Length: 156
Image (cartoon, rainbow, N blue to C red; front, side, top):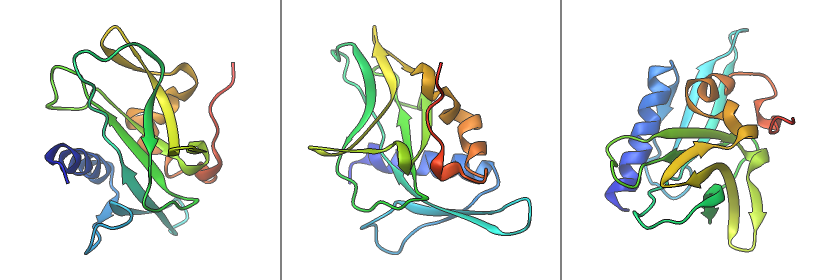
């Protein structure tokens, strides 16, 4: 495991903990990176498996109309969260944005799975217009909503 991957996982886990989620790490990391759990409004548990895939663009990265994760996932689950922390090509100390995407928006592809909630333009990462609600604090808070697993991108 690269250090940057471990940092991305710990950063996302820390953000969940700050928002009141309990974070549980597996004894062996051969599936989900961790599991989060929180009580819902009615006192029942909300449980979400989490996969973290950090994006670290190189300085010479070209513009992309869609940008995010493409590759293999060791496990998937209908209630899972694909957390994608997007780092800057120059300053990699903290992610610029983090997307928290439901499984329903993670598509299968010829290379495994893909989810592109951002754009990359002129050396900068920005959320795509229809995906903005899945980013940052608002994205984390949406994880508690009933039906979160079935959310879609917003239409015009």
